[in-house]
Image (cartoon, rainbow, N blue to C red; front, side, top):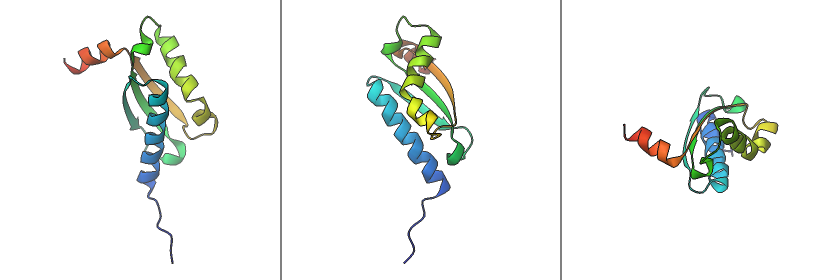
Length: 99
């Protein structure tokens, strides 16, 4: 009789999983860590760490532009309201997690 409602948290998690999938399609070798920084899926502020060898020999600005280009549709449609990015190579990532 009543449709099952998707919880507020589940909506946010669904969006984050979708965004991770989009990033992974663009950067198949990537290690991706993401976090909802606000807890509000209607105004998703996403914390996103992406480590990929696609970033080798590229400036931080270039790395961020690469990610933002991949997410441009989600940003323009307000699926993502804001993104806090951290990018690095896989070697940098592996060194960081082993410290």
